[in-house]
Image (cartoon, rainbow, N blue to C red; front, side, top):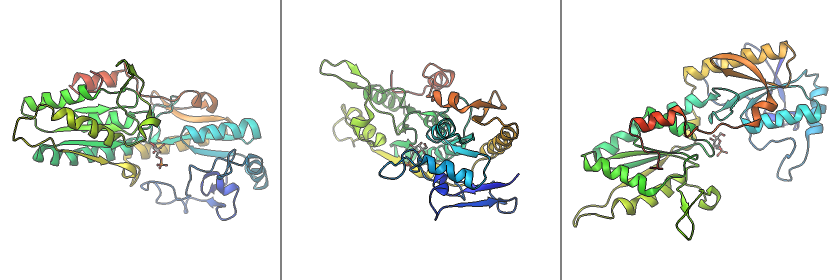
Length: 333
Ligand code: F6P
């Protein structure tokens, strides 16, 4: 079997400076412990809506696959990428195999996507470090982590890092509930608190009659950690005794630090299993399938099915219940 790497995602099949190159055991040596991709990538290279003019270049792409004599494409990425892969196969007849790689862990068809545990590791490490200043300076420290639509990183890292409050996109949160949690800690001598905020977690809004309405991320304009800090400050200091200092809150936005560096062992093993699983699928001619891990076994599932449902945090599931059981505030009560 001959393997070719495509530079800059689908761009390598469309634009000459990117191109393709053979991948051999020697050119792939030493990749296991590296993050990112030596091939380069982009999240702005949709061949069905290419470039700022959003041109449909999917026909050109299919022609390039034929000209290069490729039997098919192995497409690595999250739900957006797998949607493109599915369209390429259905609308352009390009055979594809999908491999789920995203830090978001939000594809329902697989228990794990590789990259997720490494991001959780980075976020947990950040929480461990934030604890130091929080505890010694009596501060409320907020950590904003990735997760626009799904709060898996926030929930896992929050539990692992001993957060007092975890705010998720799935649970519009009440500033009063969060402030009460922090004040209750203070009342028993815990003068600091750690709050994890997913980037898509927004406070519940109320309409003119004071009724709760769903949070609207677009209206809030981003900056979930800053929004939380601004909402909590006044509530925490409402009953400040005369002469007391106001609460010190600080927000750290972890950003792309949680996507960088080497992968943790779990992700290395998962990526290796999925790589072997993807090759098994294509050897069997099971084009149009995505390799996945379900109940700790590698298998294939039609990409169509895999992209049908994204997985958000199950708000009535075991992990959320576990967080609540150990006293973590999720902002809703
Ligand atoms: O989908 C992966 C992801 O890391 C999300 O968690 C995050 O919201 C987004 O990508 C960040 O995208 P960008 O690097 O374009 O800011």
